[in-house]
Image (tube, rainbow, N blue to C red; front, side, top):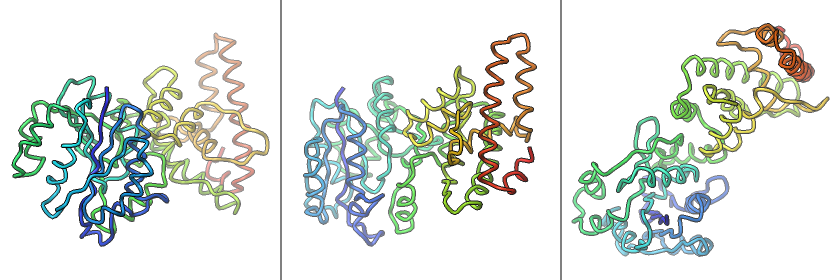
Amino acid sequence: MHYSALVLAAGFSSRMGQFKPLLPLAGRPALARVLESFHAAGPNIRQIIVVGGHRAQELAPICRAHAAEGVQLVCNPDPSQGMFSSIRIGVQEISPTSQAFFLLPVDIPLVRAATLQRLMRCFEQQDRWLIHPTFLGEPGHPPLVGQAMVPRILAHDGQGGLHTVLEEHAGNAGLCPVADHAILQDMDRPEDYTKLANQAKADYPDEQECLALFQLAETPIPVQEHCRAVAQLAVRMAEAVNRQHAGHNLDLALVQSAALVHDVAKARPRHAEAGASLLEEHGFAAVAPLVRDHADLDMTTNAQITEREIVFLADKFVQGTNRVPLQERYLAKLTRFSANPVACEAILRRLHRAEHVLDQFYSQSGQEGRLLLGD
């Protein structure tokens, strides 16, 4: 299937006080960030229409830089007529070969490419005219609007805007749950922009996105509680390492995020690999390797402790929500598999690797680390 995207960038940015399409996010203008997400979502999105208006000439260089990706700029001559006037102008340009189009205001700039991919899969599976992404049950942007809606949008008199048209066809709408907080986050005001500018630098789920991932993976409640206990310990361990050596700069937010979702796929076979794949599917590439390695890893002698080792080790010191000595975790497994010599040998190898990581942690966290783990 082929898709289009409609990016609305014609507004006056009056509440922001600065021109929103050009505000930098992780070093790139918001409009460029949006266009890059659509491009990263894959070749099925063949047409991206940017509707400019106020200061449209300043958007032209960005659109030209992405012209090879199917980006075109059209102009709303009178954006004061409101957002629906821009929608109508953009919809008139939608290719008749597109099965559906995304509708995204430029001030909702951090929607992940993985979310766009998930929406396309939902559209193809559900056979609906319209698909809304939802985050923890709340619908957001961008809706994916089927070609069947185009004539209905163009025929609308504008009263109530696009919302009225979509409500009239709510019976033909479907929902697509995603683990992407950004579908609800706009930047109407300076404080919104400051928050999104900080988020644009991260590639891992926040706490609410972790909860959404638990829901999508149907992670059992006791496992979620275990993950929270591991995250609390992991952050304290990372803080101890950072305090001991000025050269360490472990990312506490990454540690917390990875620890929170390390067992997200616990109910599935090969849960570490399954969890990493789930995170990659939802666009959290920075966290996936830590989840993949949390069950077992090998650490080079005298290597510097990283977020990966912190999450691995914290998990070994928490059983359920209770703190346990390292050896106790592995000895329990040895007892369980005592009739299987091959399994026992593998468990002992894992214990020795974990002990090596623990030694490295103690050497790099000092007395604070020993007091924290009390192993």
